[in-house]
Length: 456
Image (tube, rainbow, N blue to C red):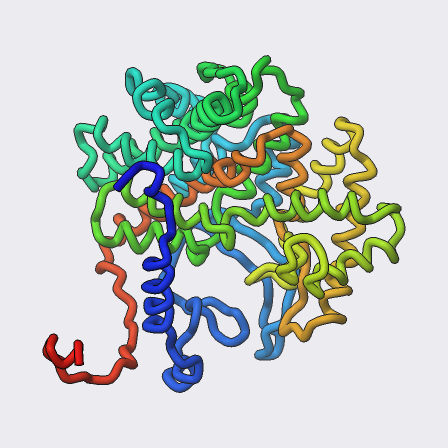
């Protein structure tokens, strides 16, 4: 096959794809007949109980007189309310990524010495194998940084003499290395892409031992390595809010499923990256930013509620943006009154918008946050309330931090690798069976047809 035909979709492929689609279609009534929980959710959107976890908890309702009613959402890491964690280290003017990572991995808050030792350990692991950047990251750079990240993770297997050892000490070592290396793998991958595809200057900054994870991200990414304290602080909080979200999210569940086969850590994390790459999971904040860019062009007066409401209505009617009928960043599978991550984020986002001189943009976001739930409830029948989610503000934050849009989802991965690591070790520690859900066959038995009769 010639190189220029590698990506070509030929008429023959189109024909065969139509056959494949037809073969794959299942009568929707059969899902009801056999009580299949599509998407592992019931009719109300509640996830099917598939396991137990001690890592994090998402709470969005309470039972009163035997009836479950929605409440403002709360997120807990190892039993600690995330809002309390953020307020705790913020009040002491500390970065929190390393502290919360320790908590999620070891089920305890570190004391000063434990945190110092752990931070040093992560710093020591911020070192890629010799020539890895030249031989792996710089070769055939992809235009999708999640693809680059997954490829880099899988390649690290070849450099690990104990790659297939699934004992907990070895898996912990591998996970800590990946937590430390994810920023470098992601940002160096972007720098290579930006250089070879866009003709920009190539910057490969080495991480600094004395810097926090958030500071190192900005230091490695920016040509001049400069950033303000508020920029680093807000990025640190963004990482913490994206670290973990219960065992039921798609990539964490993927981590449990693949770990249960007793495969290696690199294969497990690459699978989780593949899950997060999907636009239904990790790419929503990109859509939010793009939607707002069009909104700012189409709405003459950003402060006019009527004009903004008209645009939001057009979105729902598929008359604006990508014509998908969605207001991106609004709504969540679990939360119905508020997403605690968005609530925590909002005050910090406002401070950053003031520092950046983007008060009008923040006011527009706040206005959409107010109007969108009202408009959705009027336009569509919904079984629960809607509210803005963490993606609503995270995209705005990354935009204000001048992060390239290609790195939005990798930043999510840089945070979520902590949760994936905790879930991998939890699955191994409990020594469970391989995860193997049931699928009911609805095909009919057929008699084999000999070739000469098929040609007739």
